[in-house]
Image 1 (tube, rainbow, N blue to C red):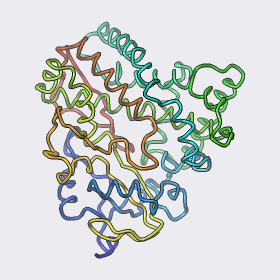
Image 2: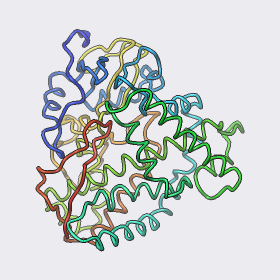
Image 3: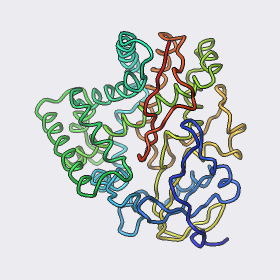
Image 4: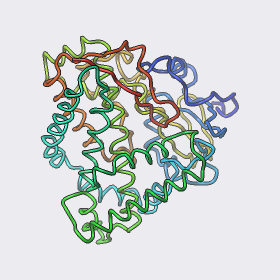
Length: 405
């Protein structure tokens, strides 16, 4: 096997030809260059993985780590990079210890709690749809439903005031942007966000509620140690950002995919029992919601299917390309709403897989259930080809999703 770093780098991220389509290079990379040398927006070089088994290995193998991304020789995504992959909040959580942190946070994200939340989520979706109907058609589903729903849900879970959601959205946009903000602007945003969350945590100590932050303040790990003050603040920050940004983007993408070929929507109307597998299939099928991918630092030389990646490298795991791997998923380029044993990597894999995935699944299933019930005639107000993504972010959400009913 040759060292992949001897090849000329591709410019990354790759651009898709349309909002709902994957980059044309993915298939060729999986076939001929599954371990590719790429240049990031910062100018730093990294290794791109596009095959399912390689990505799964990179996310699970202890020879690679997320913690290593805080090191001085790890690749930076952008010139002023202090984003969510390499941020004060992430470094704080690394210091808490991933296993210990997940043990404490997972006490909230249980199947029982998520099932109990579903009626509330559906009721919130109902209210938001009522407002959209009052607005009239066409209406932007992003503005009226996809963005506010997960924001309202995660604010309620964390005990964060709903009135602050626009401020949180502004911080989120800064942290996820690849090129727009300087290091100084990033630093100021992190400091302001941390100060804000510190005030929230302090208020929970005085007046605890039934929210997640109050639960964590009163909890301890198996050795009786409570989460540190910095850990509580960072946990609130990370869950608030991740709890709305990705789910909001995917909600819009899910509806867009289902309406882009309306036979899919009609299939779900005829058989609502397909909602659960349909959500899983769109999680697998969507080429853009997972945006940039997940980064890992290589601590020891490791061989993948297309070459050896040397120690000291940064690996970019492209989850969406892995989910289109023809060697793992039959008819990988087609959306099959009845696909069984759907082993997609939408929420990652290994010790750092998404802790909030039970909530995300519950929200997506709930919003789709309500939409099918309330708006069976829902349709796109523009041609699929006219949909546009927000450029320059680590995620790739739709700018808007105009719909009629």
